[in-house]
Image (cartoon, rainbow, N blue to C red; front, side, top):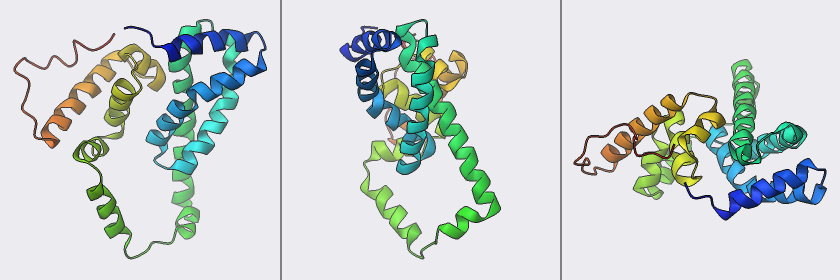
Length: 197
């Protein structure tokens, strides 16, 4: 895989930040903020929760940066921290909902279902098909195709085996193809054997 300029710049900034350069730490945060925020949003499903989660994650990222031995591993390492923080945020939210506190704070309007249906209809077929995937498959697809992660990097970011990521990508591609009514490829789908390693 050819390394893009963002990754090379990121490696330089990691090394500089590890030496105590505060400006490099700020630049590193600005460089990766949009991608990490997208990841947090995919995992939490809520923009405000994603921003709060990412803010907490950045504290851990910057604190742990000195212990990162390979600057090239920063993206997968940072995504993994965001993944863990997002999971903790979602678990906390679920606990609050189970106690009823969140339900009391969220008034349900009669037309909520209609608004959600209209919003889904306004999105393009590709976005709808992606949104309909199970969370694990949707996240793997986004990291692979949008964030340009390798299978190995996704495995690190999500704390699952690389084989699981390949399986998720294979099933997600099949579901997307079926949802979009695309013809199957003439060759046998090998579960992503041509995938970036």
